[in-house]
Length: 137
Figure 1 (cartoon, rainbow, N blue to C red):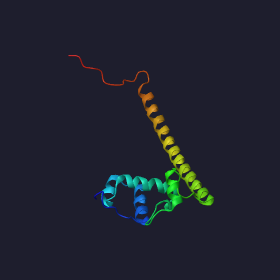
Figure 2 (figure 1 turned 60 degrees about the vertical axis):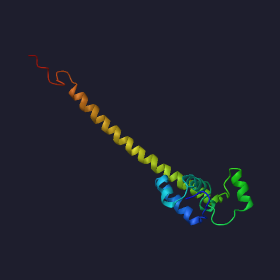
Figure 3 (figure 1 turned 180 degrees about the vertical axis):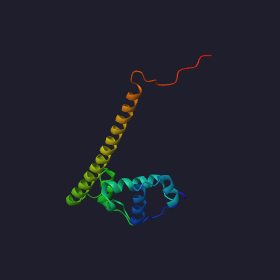
Figure 4 (figure 1 turned 90 degrees about the vertical axis):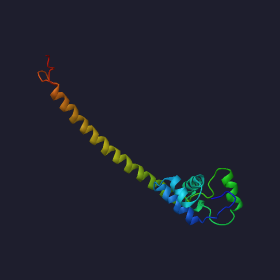
């Protein structure tokens, strides 16, 4: 797409692109498919993370407050306290699930390591040959 022509993209278009990025799609491939800049996709993702779907501007000129807020590096709208609390609780639950999964993995590998060490000790006992002796001619 040439730099001289600019497209006006809807909030829904941006939101679907951001959801695909957050689902794990390759940003470069997505940018080529949607015919938008990779940098734009990262900007949309960051705005979505900081202010949710409302932060993705749709068609039309932004309000003066939104422009001033973006220039200062602040999200355009703050989340309502209830939404912020719900988001924090969801994040905590997600992290607790990850910690639990990591604990399961650690327990598995500890047991496996104990079994390997036990097998080595049995072979390293006195009087046990570790390997065959070399044959001299």
